[in-house]
Amino acid sequence: MFDKSMGRLCIYAGQCPVHKGLVALKQPLFLVKNIYCNNGPRWWNKCKVYVRFEAGDEINDQMVPADDLSVQ
Image 1 (cartoon, rainbow, N blue to C red):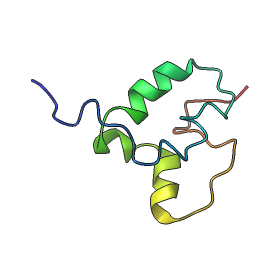
Image 2: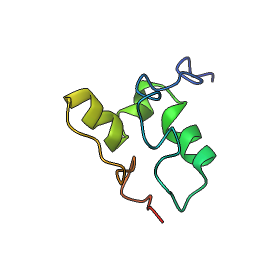
Image 3: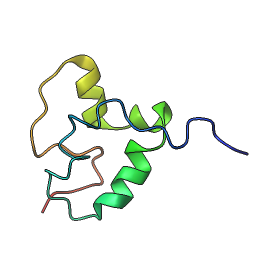
Image 4: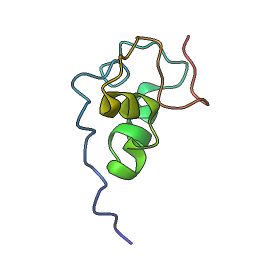
C-alpha cells in the first residue's frame, strides 16, 4: 500500500543541522534523511530534533533524531 506522506521533506530541513550535514554522524547521512527527513509527519514526530523545533526549543549541533544514532 502506498503511503501518501512518503517523499515529503521535513518542514525544518532548511534549518536542521542534521539534514544540512552539520552533525558528524557515524551513520551515513542519506540513511538518516531517508528514515526521518523524507517520510512525512509520522517519522518527523519520532525525530527528537523535529520535536524540539516544534516546541520552540534550542537546537545544538550534537542533537540527533534518535537515541540509537550517534555522532563521531
